Image 1 (spheres, helix red, strand yellow):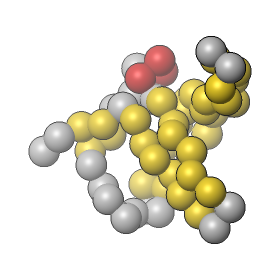
Image 2: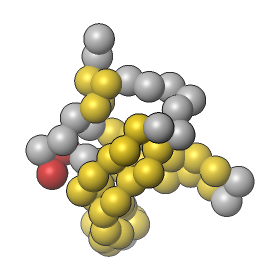
Image 3: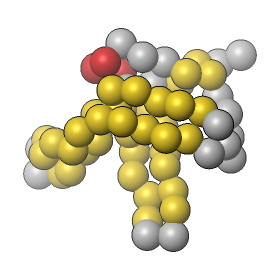
Length: 58
């Protein structure tokens, strides 16, 4: 089973990629599952990125 360090979150307001690699996390692929992600927004190379610190798969 592949493990991921980038997560694409999508809701009715848009999409955002969450990078959990800096926190040393990886999760199994769970396409279409609901998740709760904890972390912080940062600006990098002129873009807003979300660094995930914790992920709960529901």
